[in-house]
Image (cartoon, rainbow, N blue to C red):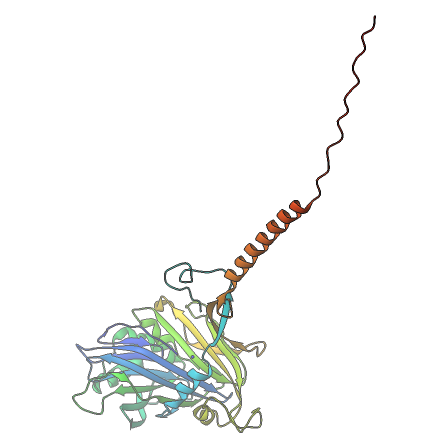
Length: 376
């Protein structure tokens, strides 16, 4: 399943997206048309793979992702998203209806269609420490620790990023919990190019004894947000609370075994799943697709913490295509009406014929009384 963020034009200096804080440069704007996130967790290690589709007039921009422990960052496999999208796509089914609707003969008009722990920190550590920096495709990635959000703001400004004071305040809970940060500059490969189109996916990997998806910074968004996650874990997962948004909705929940694994029912699959198997190390997982809307992002209260549901109940969204019931290409309702009319006509005809064949009973004989005699 996909995460869609309709953010419009994001004007400098900073705005939130589902993965963290989007920061374009001065006098520029950038919008995230779509963000897709995949979260994999085996009980000890968490991986977040995300891909952004952006547009705007910014030559560069950045986002910040808080993480509970030190993260490694590398480019992700673009095939992962297409595989999951195909695997979790709704099942299409046909649902027949009997009586004609708009668009069916003899009516005219349009048809009617229908369609579910804090990381360690050494005492006396510097306010901001760069623990790693690398260039990955179009990304300039800096992995940071910070004991002071103001110092983090200064570091970002000195490295060409704009970070407003209210975002520094939003980072304070992460600083208090001694989380670390992945700062990513989105820079086109060509110097004169603008940030447009689908970016290469990034994969973050870090230790975590609980499944968490950072959402706190999204409260800075100025427009409604929508979140969608593919969650890969040992069991079906659910958010522990709506964290200020509408109730999360599960659109897919099924156990998945990569082809060739001990739990796989067959050695091959009709749907390519090589990238999914590579992400999970070839181990069976339960895939849960979750969607959630945040009409008022300012009400977001924290990060999503996901937990196992009481039972691994499978679920698959079904989209229906309504279709008029026919028999040999003839609408069933027409055949029924015609049959009823013929049956009624046959009854009338039989009644008429029965009436004509009924014998006529002769009238009783007429007796003439004898003439009256005159009595003298």
